[in-house]
Image: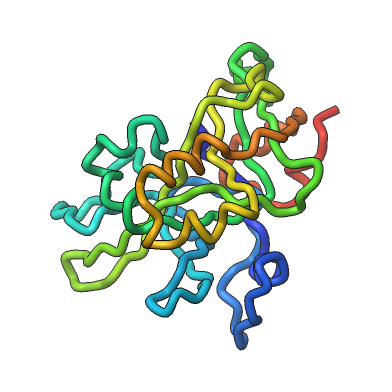
Amino acid sequence: MCGRYVSPEEAAIERYWHIGARTPPRWLEACYNVAPTMTVPILRHNESGQLELLPARWGLIPNWWKDSTPPRFSFNARSEEAAGKRLWRHALRSTRCLMPALGWYEWNEKENLRNPAGRQVHQPYFIHSDTDPIIAIAGLWSLWMSPNGEPVLSCALLTKSAAPSIENIHHRMPVVLAPESFEEWLSTATRIEAVDDLIRHAREDFAGRRVSLRVNDTRNDGDGLLAEAE
């Protein structure tokens, strides 16, 4: 499902993508337990075709949305179905972004254990690249005007079937793009057939490790969450 991931600090994103540093105050710190509705960093092309780093709400609100309450469960989209769904169709064709990450969490439903309260829960894993310090998740963005006239930039990530190396943990994973795909993914000139091709050739070189049950509580943060569980 991918409803939790790890977001790098702003300076690390700037270094990885060779973006010029902005003047203080900086708006983004690393978050090791990102959950839906939180503010996350996205990369997209601006009107001049330049790469820009922006804060966005994780949970896409389409520009045609009329309700004052944002849609539920709009934080990820199945890539196999997105082109046929009204919620995602326009963004998949026209407003794509990258969501920088250090990795993501999944819960293995085949591994059960007891939390401190004695409740049975699934074992969480942190899934990451062994070769890249930062990965780029294929995302979609939208700009919505709230009923009070406030513009809200929001995003969602795309998912696909899990890579063989991690399918024993969970059957789904985010679509993670290779560096050579970044520009084509972000370009508004890219045709939908090419978009589909980029998704089909997404990265699958990932590994997972068991981590502490502390990640189950979104109030917990810090790089200690990435430590391998004893």
